[in-house]
Length: 108
Image 1 (cartoon, rainbow, N blue to C red):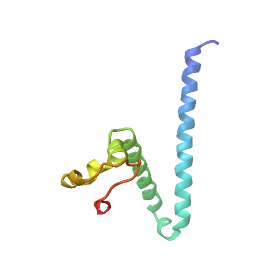
Image 2: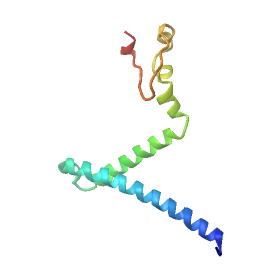
Image 3: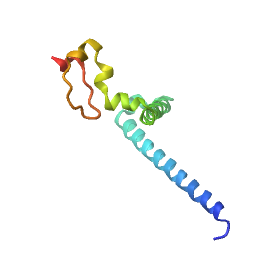
Image 4: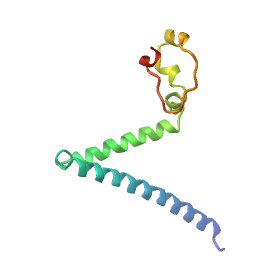
């Protein structure tokens, strides 16, 4: 195939654009559904745009947490970080499912 590197770059650029398009469609579908649920609050001037900004920042933060060591703190070892140290000494070690947080009220 002539100019193989050019075709390779175009192919991966197409894959990037498809990923961006999928993200835009998902966010726009979510935004539209929420705006349709709360039309009085979100259809006033600039409220929809501020809501889109809030959803985008929240999604970015969640994505950033998932690719850094923060996800380990939140999902893998929550007992170590959410319970005070003196309570962890008397806390019996038990397996913890990913995504479950152990709060002080669980220790009683």
